[in-house]
Structure formats: structure tokens, C-alpha cells
Amino acid sequence: MRLLLDIAWTHIRGRRRQTLISITGVALGTGFFIAISALMAGSDADFIDRVVNATPHVAIKDEYREPPKQPAERVFADGAVALRGVKPKQELRGIRQAQARLTEIEEIAGLDVAPTLRGNAVARYSGRDVAVSILGVDPRRERHVSQVESDMTVGTLDSLYTTGNGIIIGTGLADKLGTRMGATLTLSSPAGTVMKMKVVGLFRSGIVQLDNTTTYALLKKVQVLQDKPNVINEIRIRLDNLDNAHDLARRLEARYGYRAESWDEVNEGLLETLVVRRKIMLSVVSAILLVAGFGIYNVVSTITYEKVRDIAILKSLGFEEIDIKFIFILEGFVIGLAGVVVGWALGYGLSAYLDGVEIDMKEFTAATSLPILYDITDYLIAAAFALGASTVAGFLPARKAARVNPVDIIRGAA
Image 1: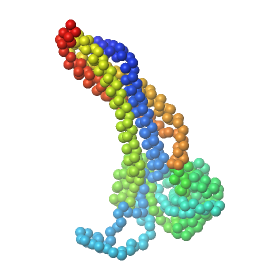
Image 2 (image 1 turned 45 degrees about the horizontal axis):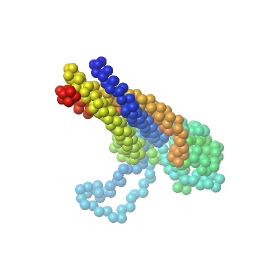
Image 3 (image 1 turned 135 degrees about the horizontal axis):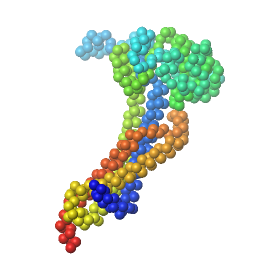
Image 4 (image 1 turned 135 degrees about the vertical axis):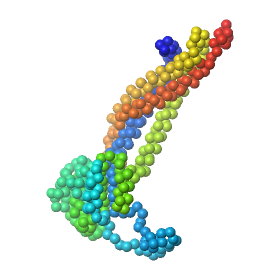
């Protein structure tokens, strides 16, 4: 074994320039794979943290996934029924038996739940009107299902309890209205109710859409503003394990009939985009490693051609075909291993550099730097792919070298 290693090392060292180029190719492929994987994984984690955690993991709404069937459709379920001019019955929107259902959901382990009345309003201040979404919340429960309290730059959720008609608004909305802490806004709802509300807190989530349009107030105050006493139209749930959201949503929808949406259903299009983006990245970087494999193949093939007489002599001395194969496969593996080690260092350096790059994305979020996630799995995957490509690149010429007939070579040389 030691002798085979010495022969392989001698061959590699004899073609230093070509070997160095091959190592550089593997290192670049490995390094870019690690850096881009860290960037992609970091952006995925940042997306989940900013968008998903800013919204409930599961939301039960006062609507149905499919409209309820008319009586004639239920009676003649298997018949051909045509309905014309049917006017839907006027119903008060809201989740029925909301308190009982809240109590039932709270008994499920591993989650927090909060009632919400979500409505629209127009906020007026100093002659400026802005359409807003107002959420009536219970601060005691709300702090467990959303990040609004941790996102607050001024004030606290409990300020809603201590102020008569308190309201918490986003910093973007405050800039649009030209308002500040302690200012009094005038809110008008579609129900025709007008209410004076005092700004008791400002929050900044980093998601421009939320910061520019969302407001929070006490549930009872919003019920008065929307003229919906004792009504909630959304039950928001936050789970300890995010992966259970989809199954829980399906169970709750089957149990209560109301539409229950999990975070992955709401953001399905974005999640698909992340998966496609990651596959494209893997394809591009894999192509780099494949090109590096061709470089290794070229080096080992050249060595095989140049050392054909040495191979004949080794076989005449008693070396088996498997020994010859091992020598040249080992040469490809060693080149790949050297490239992986250099690539690991390069990948970590690129990741550290990207981690400090400042960016401006105010149109989408308030992110100030590229999100980087360091994961040893990326290093192992890159090493496995690079070493696999290097070994295969060495195997092809190794198989040719093992088939050399020493009699023909020595006779030809003579």
C-alpha cells in the first residue's frame, strides 16, 4: 500500500502545473458551492424569520374553502340541478362559538392561540388620509403568537391597556401620516363609526407592507369601531414546531368547517420559488465541479500515456491490474482531496466576506446585510461531490492503464 502511494505521489508531483490547475478547478467549484449554499440557506432562513414568523403559523378565518350548498343541491345531490337568481342569505360575518373553540384549541399541546378581529379603516392625521388594516387583539395572548412586541421600537403592547383608545402603528405608516408618539389619529371604518385613537407604540418589522399598513388596537375597541360587538373573524395560532402547521390546519378545518390556512399554504408560491432557485444553484455549481473533473481526467490520462513503459515494467514485476487501477484512481482522488481542502477554506472565506456586505432593499425589507447560514452539511456535500467527480475522472484512464500488455510494450521498445 505504501509503495502504491509513493508511485501515485511521484506521478502527481512530476506534472506540477497541470496538477495545480486541476486542484484550482476543484477548489473553485467547492468554494463557490459552499458560499452560494450558505447564501441560499441564509436567505431561506431570513425569509422564514421575517415573513413567516411575522404572521401566524395557522390562521382560522370566518370563511369557507367551498361555498355552502343550496338546499336543492343537498336534497338532489346526485341529480342535475340548475339554480338561477339565488340571493345568498345575509349573515353576520364572524366565527361562531369563538370562545368555546379558543378553549378547545388551547388544550392542544405545543401551541399558543389568540383571537383577532381584522378590519379596514381610514386613518386621518393633519389632513392626510391613509387606508390601513386594523387588528383588534388581546395583548396578553398576542405577544405569544406574533413578533409585534419584539418589533416595537417605542412603547409596549400593554400600553393598549393603560390608554383609553390606544393604537400601535408601523413606522412606515407614521412617516406617511407625519405623526409621532402621543399623537391622536382619527379612524373611520366602513361601518360609519369614527373614533379618536392615540398612538401609544411604534413597531418596525422590516417588512414594508406591514409597516406601512398594519395597526393594532384592543379587541374591544376594534369591535366598536367595526360595529361588530363580541365578534372575532380570525383565530391565530403559533406552534412550537413549525413543521406541524399544515397537519394542524387540516385537522382544525375538518373539525370546525372554517377555512384554516397554514403558513406554507399562504406562502406556497414563494416556497416553490425558493426550491427552484436552490435547484438552479446546485445545477450551476455542479457544472463547475464537472468541468474540474475533466481537468483531472486530462492530467491522469496524460500521466497514463507518458508512463505506459513504467506500467509495463510494474506489471512485469508482478503488480496486478487492480494495483495499477488503484494507483491512477488514487492520483485523481488525491488531486480532488487537495482541491476540497483548499475549497473549504475558500468557501468559508467567501461566506465571511458576503456576511459583511451591506445591501439596500428598502423596497422589500429593511435588511442591511446579506443573510449567511453556516452549515457543515454544505461542506460535506461539496466534498462528496468533488471527491466523487475526481475519483470517476481518475477511474477512466486507470482502467485503460490496467489493460496494458507488458509484453507488447517491452517488445515495441526493444
